[in-house]
Length: 203
Image (cartoon, rainbow, N blue to C red; front, side, top):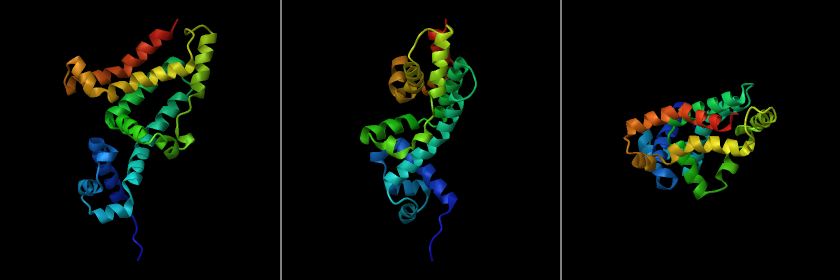
């Protein structure tokens, strides 16, 4: 008789794998560890996911597809440019605070396998920034912001939001703060990043 997959077991495996990948990365994780973390045997783990790579891709895709629609909704809303900058920062930082493994997760895999992202995620899953770019150009034309390349502005927005998560250990050492204080700094950045960017471009 053919086995049927149980959604509860699959979710338990994905959650266990996420914790192991977060702690040890793709290379350091072992299927037996993930099976132990999910409280199942290794044979059952392989029934649900035939390889560590397939499991890694499933964990990554699940997390990415939670964030992408939120950002896409903000970038393609009818809100003003400044509201989009505020909404993007608030939404992104709020999400990554809940999923702190994700930025390093992505960087580790891109360093290991540069084609990973383009192969795994179809183009429609990425947030479109075309409307954002058009708004930047319109704001420059009507004199409400200083001239800036829209792609450079988006890179600034991404960079200022992602770096504190990628470089958390280094920044905590430089700043001389503990985990609790650093978490508060991250919370504050939900508005600090947007204020900094808006103040740098508004007339």
